[in-house]
Length: 224
Image (cartoon, rainbow, N blue to C red; front, side):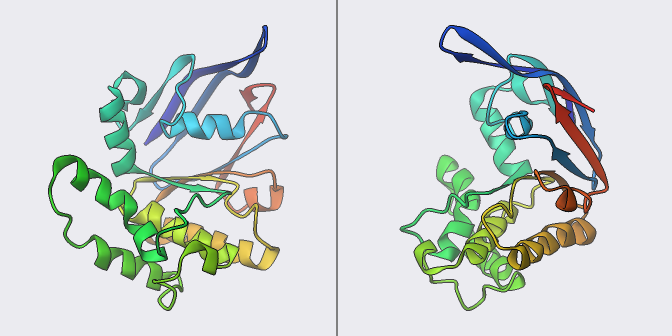
């Protein structure tokens, strides 16, 4: 399903090269749940962004199914990412001027806007997703009118709107209290059980990491 081969990532810090990832190999099977753990600054989020096509590696390859992600053109990679990958971040990245319903619909509207075709059913699907995760009475509320847990639920609905094959989650409970965090994790892992959605979850919390079927630890730019 998702495979990284020999991933290296280097950032330039003044006159120095900061080698964050040093030959990462990772394979995630269809329907598998994998947590990625490691100390702060180890490169967990960098790896997740590379797996999702958001940040190009200096060398190495990422395959989603049979597609070599970084061999695709920018437009094709963006299209592939939109259709096959959902992202859930620690910071919800909701658009403040839009309602919960409108935020959840956004990824479904992108291909329609590009092609000039009117999207049918995006609103209804977004409504169903939000109702299924307990936000049926908050559809018209803007992010500033929602709690942190509610905003993260909207972000999850947005991630699911295009039926992604893979969910990439970067500290999805990092801004939430423990009770709300557990509820968000229940939603995410429930999706895996119900739909066999592949999940890669970055966390610094070993208790959260144990909920995944497998844990990969990043230390010194490598996976152990």
